[in-house]
Length: 87
Image (tube, rainbow, N blue to C red):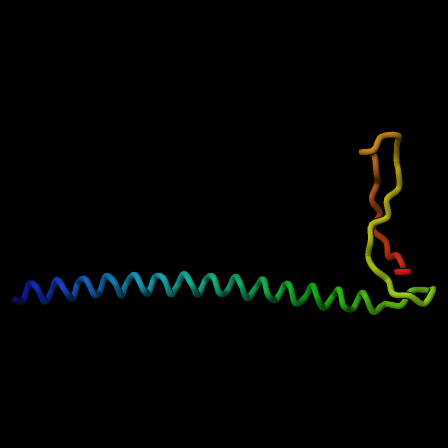
């Protein structure tokens, strides 16, 4: 009788231990998700601030790369990040 009760208690403790481990894993996942959400919010804030910068011609600016050929082949292109006005 006592052995059966002890076995049931041990089984329940194992299940409880598994649940605790699962909860800890979920906490780690949640921390990672929060970090990603903070980075996304920061990126959106920066993009919003960039979009509000007025250009010299009165339009809004958008960060776009400017391509300048550096040779004769299609693969020889130099990328120069600049602010281009949206027309």
